[in-house]
Image (tube, rainbow, N blue to C red; front, side, top):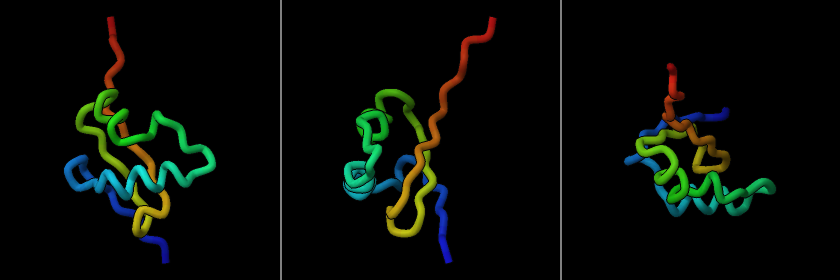
Length: 65
């Protein structure tokens, strides 16, 4: 059974997060924890199992005129 956890930023283990991103075939710098901190403070994530698969959830608002 697949377990998906919704984690707040303070619950995310940066080392395990970045290791998962680095091992990915599409491991881009944009998914690195430090980059996400700079891009979208307070980001959250969906994490499958023991960081086998991760997905960042950014919190950015668009400018509305």
